[in-house]
Image 1 (cartoon, rainbow, N blue to C red):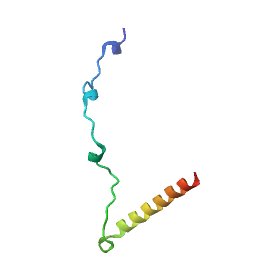
Image 2: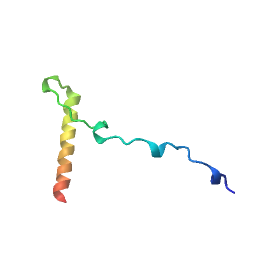
Image 3: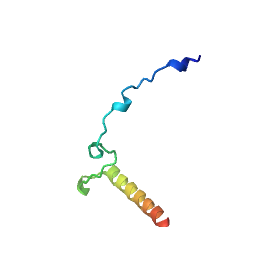
Image 4: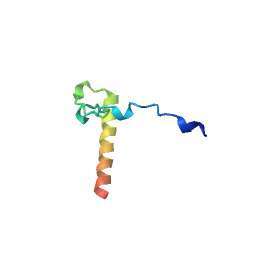
Length: 64
């Protein structure tokens, strides 16, 4: 017989893990408000990239 024939699964608790509600999960893409007076050059560039990405997504949705 092969070695894997009698091996047991290592994650016995995997099926018993509790479900986490979506509202308690943290998201890495959070909308944050800030004042323009406190923004530095990196913030302005990031905002410009985000706006450009949003426009590309809208164009793709309109082309469908």
